[in-house]
Length: 191
Image (cartoon, rainbow, N blue to C red):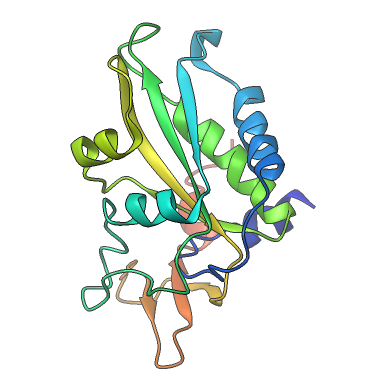
């Protein structure tokens, strides 16, 4: 079951924008983040849920999408995320957030996959602009934005090509291809 969830948990960038996500579902996903391991158990992360159409539209303008897809500016109207979870670091608790964000975001995305939702971790954010849009309090640092929704794109995992090019790409049918290294190339020793 976990391998199936991990395999389904891809970076989705196109969604059915009309398929809104219930507030209680978003809170459940944030609860998975809350329950995730935390370095020193300091729990310095905070979460902001954005789910209204107006606020989603405002957040969208602060994000950059899919750096390898140079001719694509992000999802068009109708295929934009139905919600976002903004992951913030509370600088009153920690100055370095270490591995906490990665652990908690993976929990959220696995929970989303279990609910037939998809997401995309976005780090390329106009942070100052987003902080104004969301009225983020002083002492909170925007770390990541997680775009969420019902995926409308197909994402396939394939073997890394012989030339070693690991960049994801889209074909003529807009299928998103994600090359992955073979397990035999990653396990360097078994002792």
